[in-house]
Picture 1 (tube, rainbow, N blue to C red):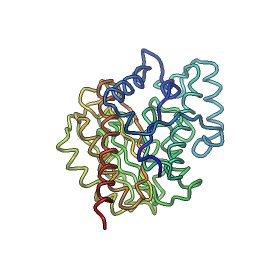
Picture 2: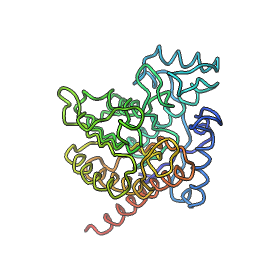
Picture 3: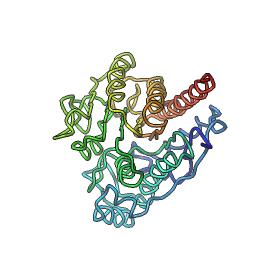
Picture 4: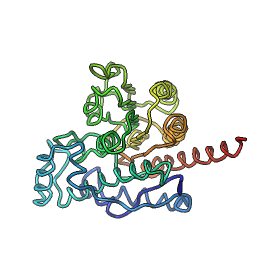
Amino acid sequence: MTNPLCVYLGEALGRYHFGEAHPFGPDRYPAFLAEFERRGLRARVAVCEPVRATDADLALFHDPDYVARVRAQSAAGRGYLDYGDTPAVPGIHEAAATVAGTTLAAVAEVMAGHCRRAFVPIAGLHHARRDAAAGFCVYNDCGLAIEALRRRHGVRRVAYVDIDAHHGDGVFYAFAGDPEVCIVDFHEDGRYLYPGTGAAGETGTGEAAGTKLNLPLPPETGDDMALRRWDEAEEFLRAARPEFYLLQCGADSLAGDPITHLRLTAAFHRHVAARLAALAEETAGGRLVALGGGGYRLDNLAAAWNGVIEGLLDATQGDIEERARRP
């Protein structure tokens, strides 16, 4: 083990955006990076470079015909990749493939033992379907990570935890019938927010019934209620005994986001990251990758994502201290 935590940084990740007038604009990565530097976190982590996914990588989750369509529309630079949220801006295929490839690289680094955990800021594109874009998401790097873990790395049980304000529908429905993919999804109740899915009664289909936990939160929910529900989530995850954890830590669940209605703080994100890292130590050899996700108020995004990094570092320090106390 050479590094406890790898953080992926680079302008290539920052190129995943849809222009100044779009909520998913070009200032998100610079806002995160400025706060990362202000907190002195670079000295505490290993910094890794972005990686672009190949067509073979993308085919782990996505229909090749869909990838070809994205490539063509990206080259043309016009129209939409979905019904109107996700513009086909020039270069979006290359930018989205970089997000996907970087998440796959983070998974591979953790699996190889080069780091114990990893964080990718511009990532967690959880709405994209196997054959379609949706909700600002072109390629679903979360789904790709799950497929890579199962098919390339031999991991059987994967836990996907999502605390973005929006339900991670692209991941949930892709694996709704898979009993070995445990999903916990905190989100604003779909009766009030896109994509309108993720009811508490959706627990998986067929032999996977009971392996998914949706936790829809009413608008204006703050940390107190979310932390009470987190205790339920933690019990659920511990019982599943996953071998690898993925965390989608969208910052649009913080108070003041312009397109959502929850009122969480960055303290919740830091708590979840630290607790998931502790759970990963119990069943998964510490293996965890965190992905930035949504978030459209820049100070919230910077606070939440850097709080996640600090939570992962808190857990790492705790691991070191615990090992030092052992005879």
